[in-house]
Length: 401
Image (spheres, rainbow, N blue to C red):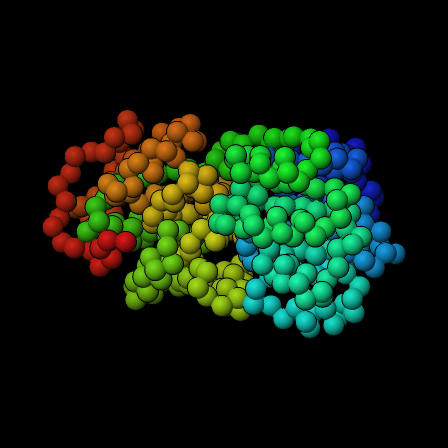
């Protein structure tokens, strides 16, 4: 299957080929013909499967470049995802000259509005900022053709359902609406029944995308030894670039400070940082100026960073889906990756839920006690059960979360 056969025009195919993209992914093959045909769509696809191009390609093709009004709107749950989608859209706009406005917190939108001189054809942004501009009258969606709600499950999980409903109430009813989601929950179904008209449903294969190229391990430890054992695994693996996930902002900041004091080239990423700081951190991480990124789940979706060899779950997430999104930051573009979960007894139930969700048991390992941090070995029990070991009664510096 080629992009030509899906109905994508030669200019956009040329733009893809300039980026060495020649073959559609499953979600692109399933979605693009339906979107081009004007159908409303509910698409279930995990992050990292190419869904951004699944909606941007037909959206670009359907926009009339002679019409200076807004014809496309993409709503995303996070600033990071808005930035990522805008980056992909900007690359396409080098071939198809479409004026793009990105709308998210911490950005000088007035300067961008002045630069575009009111000639905006595609808006990409977060719900709060889009609503703000609707209330101020600085953007107008009267001629909108296509609306995309991306990562709908995360959007509603973090509490944006009211804002999204408010935005949609101010859009033309005759629009086309596309809903992309990693999982189709009850809330997503309720939303689609309210706002979509006779939608088509497509579902991309899941397992091969995020898990096939990723080797997963669980490192069993205790609260007292958690940070010490994490350091041993980290030093034993020598990651080229790694993301370490924590569950809370406070936990992220605490681990960041500990790693910084231990001499690591590390930065933190969470919602309490200013937008300028977050963009600085992500740019430095992408450009290999930072080797380790300690982050909350704000970094788990929508961020396609090349060269991430390892992912560490310092804390397990509350939702099994988030585990898949986290480890999906490695093992991308056909490359191999490794994911370690640092497990204490309080996370056992979360791990059980994850193993049910991914339909596999993850190998459990323990850190050798008779070796130092620079030359230690991991003990692997292939049965998946930890070996009985006596732990030293020294307290690690991190302690409890």
